Amino acid sequence: MGRILLVEDEPEIAKLLELPFRTEGFELDHVTNLKDARSTFNDEKFQAVLLDLNLPDGNGIEFCKEIRQKSTIPILIITARRDEVDRILGLEFGADDYIVKPFSPREVVARVGAILRRLKWSSLLNDNSSKEQDVLEYMGLLADKIKREVKVDGKPISLTKTEYQLVVTLLRRPGMVFSREKLIELVWDGNYIQHRVVDSVISRLRRKLGNLPDGRPRIKTVHSVGYALTELDE
Image 1 (cartoon, rainbow, N blue to C red):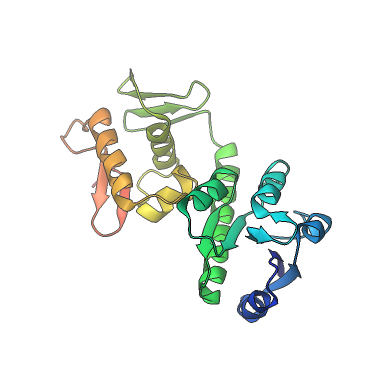
Image 2: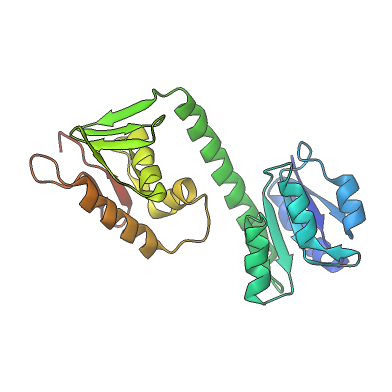
């Protein structure tokens, strides 16, 4: 059973969340202030932190910053503050997600679950990539991970950081179809990105990569599913 640290000064919130989390196999450890949160926190003990911003002895953002200095544990901020500045500050200081009160307990559980699944997927992908060669190559498209260089038919091309990460992600699984959601998880680290942003970057990357000798684009669109590298035998 996984454990979640809830830092929240309203006991009613803890009661609302306890059963939904238990149903999904999580145990909720509830503290009501920053002092107890600091003494209780241990990233080897917990799988995620639910953190209120308005606490009796300080601002939850400070605790978020402290955690990020020593741990990458998922942090989901829950707060009554609706100001966009608070939301942005929380994300900038390391929170993985943000939800405003009042909320659906099931939504909170679902968001925590989504973050944990994303981290598990990224971990598996990183484990696999650590075994990869330093150079990934497929049908004239080459990515040198040491030089952070991409070549098309032997010619280097200029890519942004995001475009480079997209190429490497696609090259790791030639032919595999990546949904927009999965690309957001792997390339944008799961940050809130609209699907049209993914489409726009893919479109720009297509132009830079050009077509295969037979005229097909190197990145294909699979209708209603996502994107993949075009395969030779299609």
